[in-house]
Length: 166
Image 1: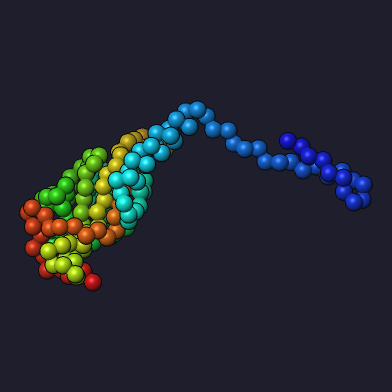
Image 2 (image 1 turned 30 degrees about the horizontal axis):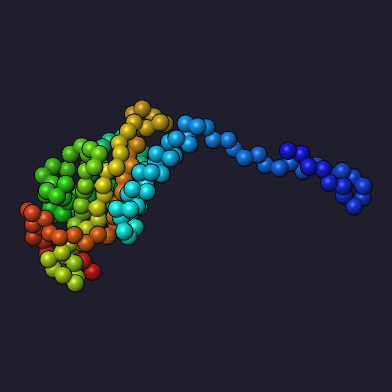
C-alpha cells in the first residue's frame, strides 16, 4: 500500500506500509490443534512451574536427553546414575542407555525435602513428543516438559539416600 504525503517544501514523499504476512490454512489448523492441546494441559496444571522445550538430538538415550534437558554435564548425569538418583517411570534406573518413548517420566533426585523428610525434591522431565527433525533426518525433535524443582512422595521402591536439599 502506497501513501503519499506533501512535505513542507513541496516535494512528494512516498511511504510504504508493511504488509502483514499471510498464514496458510494448514498452518492455522496446526496452531488450533496445538492451542487446544495446550488449553487442556493448562486446565490440568493449576500452577505453571514447568517449561516446555524442544530439542534436536541425534539420540533418544535417557542419559543424553537428561543431560540436554536439565543443562547438566555428562559427568553429573553419570554420578547421579551411580548414586541411584535417577528414576525412570517411577522405578530406579538399572541401565543409563535406555531409549525414551513418549509419555516417559525421568526424575533426578536432588535430595530430601527440608520441611518433610518423607518427601523428595526432584527435577523431572516428561517426554511429550518424539519425531524426526525437519532439518535433518538423522536428528530427533523431542518436546519435553521440564520441572526444575518438584516435590514428590518417595517411590514404591524407596530412595534411601542421605542428601538433604538446601
